[in-house]
Image 1: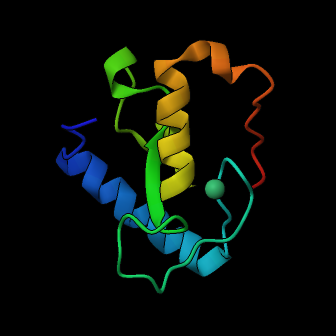
Image 2: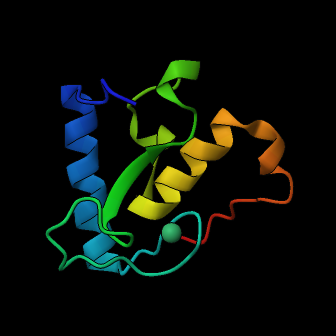
Image 3: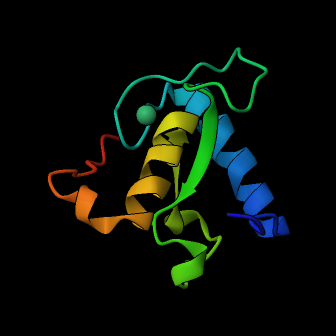
Length: 96
Ligand SMILES: [Zn+2]
């Protein structure tokens, strides 16, 4: 993690958040709703934006590489990427 702060990323994150609020869009990974009322960015159900293809693996900040994800699910995915053998059986389904 680290340098996810390009202007494009910030713009697309704000756009995705607005869309998620308007459409009751669930988390891309677990399908549960977000807690848009929390002010803690590290709350488990807080809204975050995740790169489908990690930046470190050549992913871009373009909208098609970004999905809405809970803070906890974003974290969980980062962990599985560090240890890929734990990823078996996990399958993300696009529900929106
Ligand atoms: Zn989630």
